[in-house]
Image (tube, rainbow, N blue to C red; front, side, top):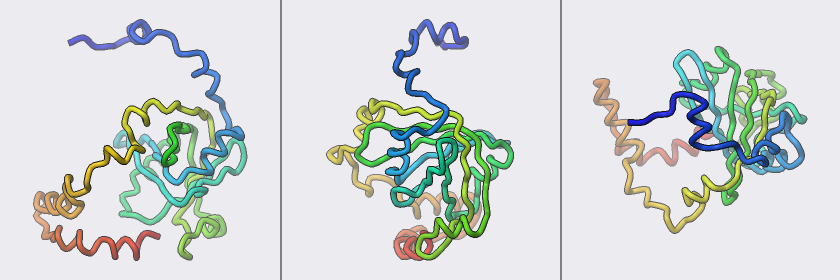
Length: 206
């Protein structure tokens, strides 16, 4: 099996980058990237720590990411399962990557930089949803911003409802949790979990 093991081999296979792909990388948030970020309800956060790489999602109504200025973003962190994988990684290694995704839009915005975890009460309160403040706020110092064309979204048909599968074709959260609970010799009623989860999420989403 052939594999690529040097940068020279990689460049020989793919060739030089398209010139305009280099133009659109900047070290700040310009007015165009700001419009995308402020319209975004969902992002993926990548971090790296002692246990390796982690990616996790963040979501709220569009505008939940605050563009403070060209070099700084603020992202609220909400309650969850308290694994805190991303936050633990940030404490060890502040380098982060972000992909901003907007429904029915092909282009995405990629941002990389460093993060700090802020717990200022006034700031957390300013990100309140349903009268519940953010648990903390991630302050992102922007080092690189870039817009990615829509090829990946188009290839995946991500926004094409005609190819969506029915949720019943996949195992439920309760079924998966029950499977893992057996491996740890714990009693867990997956069917009851699935039945009660809509009400549980309503009460605990914020």
